[in-house]
Image (cartoon, rainbow, N blue to C red; front, side):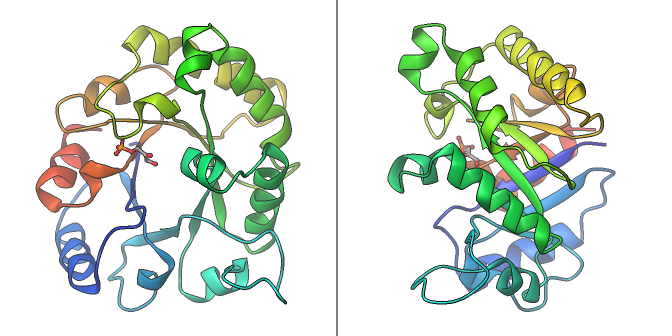
Amino acid sequence: MKFIVGNWKMNGTPDKKSAMIRALSETTTENIVILCLPFTLLGGDNKNVTIGAQDISEHENGAYTGDVSGQMISDMGAKYVIVGHSERRFYHHETNETVHAKAAAAIRHKLIPIICVGETLDEHKSNKTFDVVRKMLDVCLPESGEFIVAYEPRWAIGTGKTPTIDEVKKIHQMIYEYLNVHGHTTTPILYGGSVNKTNASDFANIPHVDGLLIGGASLESETFLPIIKSVN
Ligand code: 13P
């Protein structure tokens, strides 16, 4: 049993969502499948498919034009929320401190944050991956409450490039040990970055990989369902 999380990013229409919800609700799997949708697609009839958002405001309410609060996300029936995705860090200059505040806001509203960590290509090339990820964990993780960590190297997102199995094994081992030392003994750790139906089971079978976070390949049932079926 693994987590299979689709991140639709800024994609999708009501019709595409309905088609995916129908396909997922007709698929039997032992895996925990979560669909993280744009805010505009969160509500409506989700037919028992578990829904997540892709961002959350660290604030409760008030004059924050364009932001969406934990209460609003929860009111739409979502159970999870991605925080600290590298696209939020890069395009919206979110810091580790912001990510921490957003994870805490999620937990206040009984949402489970999926906290993303990962290095850039430059950091990867200069062997800073472990330091960068450790620093992110130091600052981003909430003090208490249930959460998930997703390791997504920025350079592997949407590029078709991936770390080697051995690289993923080592970084997941480090994250697992880090979480254990800090008392988070049951926190799931996901891998994300250019996962597709061909490589999904290879990544999912690595020790301490408890699931996958999938962008492009989660948009169509033709590419998403084979991933769900290939992983167990
Ligand atoms: P891709 O699967 O498209 O590389 O995206 C990964 C991702 O960013 C999921 O959050």
